[in-house]
Amino acid sequence: MAVDPEDRVPENKVSPPERRYPDTKTINRKKLVGQVQSTGHTWDGIEEFDNPLPRWWVWTFYATIVFALVYAVLYPAWPLLSRATPGILGASTRADVAADIQRFADANAPIRARLEATELTAIADDPDLMQYATSAGASIFRTNCSQCHGSGAAGVQASGYPNLLDDDWLWGGDIASIHTTLMHGIRNTTDPDARYSQMPKFGELLTKDEIDQLVQHLRANAGQENDAASATAGAALFAENCVACHGEAGLGNRELGAPNLTDAIWLYGGDVADLADSVTNARFGVMPNWSPRLSEADIRSVSVYVHGLGGGE
Image (cartoon, rainbow, N blue to C red):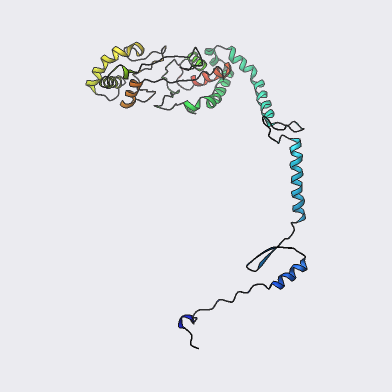
């Protein structure tokens, strides 16, 4: 019989060996010899047997169960609605932390009492007190103040969070003024003694062209690039509307929290668009009063720390 040329194996090719599978009778015989039960799973001629786990593994597993039960009885384990089961040993990591905190509080109690009793201006004369207040103030600052002023106290430029490293202060940079600001905050609704001032929205009082002229005058007064003709016209507008708070020379007024407009330090940005926005819509930055959350010693420590950053007066 003739062979189709397409079915022929090329002379340079080797036919693969025939695949052989284990004989079922052989598998069953081995199973009987080992007395191992089959799971009934067979795939591609391979049968799965139900071999038992090693005894050491089984006993280790039982030991972990016993350990878990004993632990649940001895230590806090099962959550309830408002607490967890305490365990018969009464162990509590929260209580351990609270005890450590109290231990350090007791150790620092004498120097904290001295800090509260010492005049703010005299703290710098006591090296031990100054060292403690600066270290404690830095820690408290990073925990409570860095979210707005940054971990390095440089603030967030043009975003309303002041830089505490320079000597530009809205409400005063001596240590007593810093302490008062920390105690009562600025423009908050929780402390009746909070520092308060409010700039009017000149967008409701002046035209856009007048606001543009006023902005050019502000930039000229701060030594920034400006349009001279518009700045001259803006000077008259400044005299009519702004000198009551910022002063004739634009040097500001710390009693009112009115910033110095001559140093080119802008809390909300100093380009034309940002200044126009500030004049048009005004700004109303808020700082919380820290007296309900921090102790007097803590506030004094932060005052010392901030005062010593480089801009303190």
